[in-house]
Image (cartoon, rainbow, N blue to C red; front, top):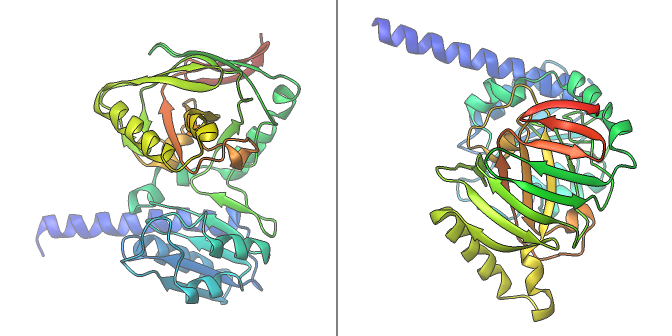
Length: 343
């Protein structure tokens, strides 16, 4: 056996071990699977190695474990095959390690209503599973995120700035969401993994200023920053080369099917959040980019999931690097460092 072949084999074994370690964390810490529980792993040909690691980790805890492979032809937004949906709703725990997200499908909603607790890992790769955000200490992360609650309560005025040129102000329109911490131990609960962010609904018509997205956009690392000018909660202009043109065309296309009175709501700044996961890195993977510790993101378009009125059917997110985030008299983030302290 050649030296190169031996090295490749050794690296493959290391990767498998690292994936299994992360999978054990998912099973035991995040989902807190118990020996009497039914567990289903849903995977597809592109994510089968991750699925296998989750299956193996779950089988160490319970022998009531099944793995189902989705067809290669499954498209984003489509329902899974009826047999998969039927199995999902009979489980205590469902692990969705698939290329395309199943979070917004009827099958997932039905399973949640029936009491399954679900972890969704759309776009998960072997490298993402073995390193980065998936390897965080989720118990510690839950404790840190819930510890922010006293600072976030009753403070509503947010200002976000960055060296890249962001300077935007808004009021919060609901409570800050502190549940994206990776711990999913209650019936009907759903989490994305990797997890670790804090986010909020900006109150409609209160946001004004400039947002510069310089990290990634919808899972693509940016070569050139994208600048959004915002007036009264709506984007009034987008600039920044080809990426900006693409965003504008997506928004224009989505506007076509809406009543004239609602068409402008496509331009809503729908969500704001910042990452808390110390192991996550900007990688061009949508889920991981949003939880990078000290990075921030804005969502644009539909805000109905957070309780807003802009139900427009399109939601896009961009991540910014090294922001400063102020909340009244509290510095939450200073130039990309989580500080969370009163001034």
